[in-house]
Length: 257
Image (cartoon, rainbow, N blue to C red; front, side, top):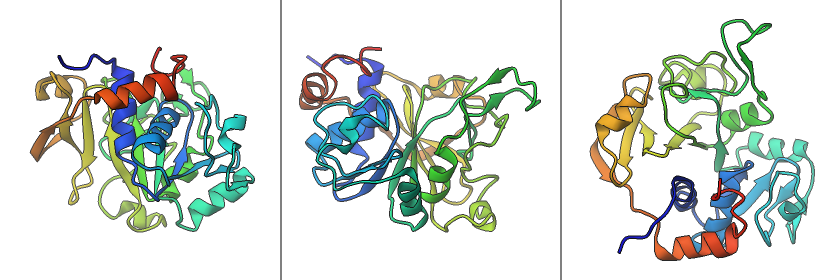
């Protein structure tokens, strides 16, 4: 019988598979923490996880609940400051970062600041950038993990909090951002999305089991490109689910939501 899993467990497992051993990753709160810890246990034992509050390469004894949680510094190589962590990104030494947001457009630009057309009087005031602008600007590959619907996947973000490919190929470089950096993958509850090399537009690369391309398109507010080699996402394995449920998040802090 196929393994039974919920959408959050699927997102965590997919995120964990994207991290290579011996790579560096800037980790945010929530699903990224679970994905990084699962990767550390199964696929990337030598991964260097970094947290905004200053923890670098901890051997996390359990799932942290924030970037300042003491577990982000347990047996770490270094416990420093946010300034040092962001400066490490600026020096080009961080391979991956996980980000999210209220809105994302076809070029991977993110909005976590406000909904509406008036900054002083928005419809919704969101938490803001935190370190998201720095990380999306300076880390080499940005992985976004987010549910997919038309409210989030929009033609144009209401506010540009974190730059993706801005308005197309070459725009990041013209803005002064590191050449070769930028959006990498978008992991959703329906599919895995990447970016076309020529246009830098978002494209569907893999459909999750039981999901059709029409369902993905119906939940997106702009026209998606589709890869010529469209794949089916491998579902979570029995071992992934066991480690995730028993060792990474036994209390269901993330996967039980």
